[in-house]
Length: 182
View (cartoon, rainbow, N blue to C red):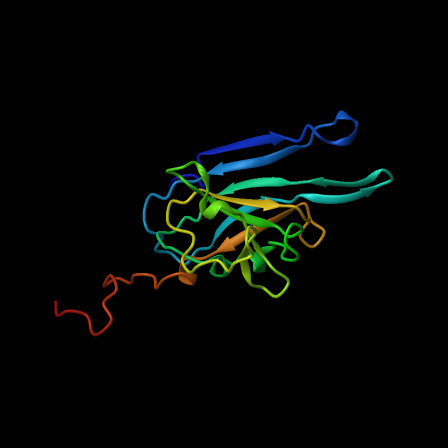
């Protein structure tokens, strides 16, 4: 069997008070080699950012997590089990955010990151418009921006299953009626 990931890298936050650094697991590169056909969940650890009030004001650490939706489907962020896993929704500019790249222009797709508002609606940060259906596509580079600890924890685990997106092929490869005669 192949490993869960090929490469894992660590980032360092050099902007912490007192000149300290905080090693953060930054990226795990995971290839999609075949269509997942087992109802086994995918799991990716998301490092959390933090907001702290200090005597001189507030301090915020923002963590960028590079992740992969390892499925051959296009989807809307509401279908990705993000909020259920630990993504913090809320007011624009204070909630966690997610985005993907336009690989042709090397810029954020649609020129905006995405957040989930207090009512659970997924919106573009720029313009506050609703996110379109099937916004994220297979092979997109996805970045989750964490500003908030999730339930007081420094990490949360993004978990999703192929069965949340499509019917798993059976031994007849999707045959829906009676199997063919031998």
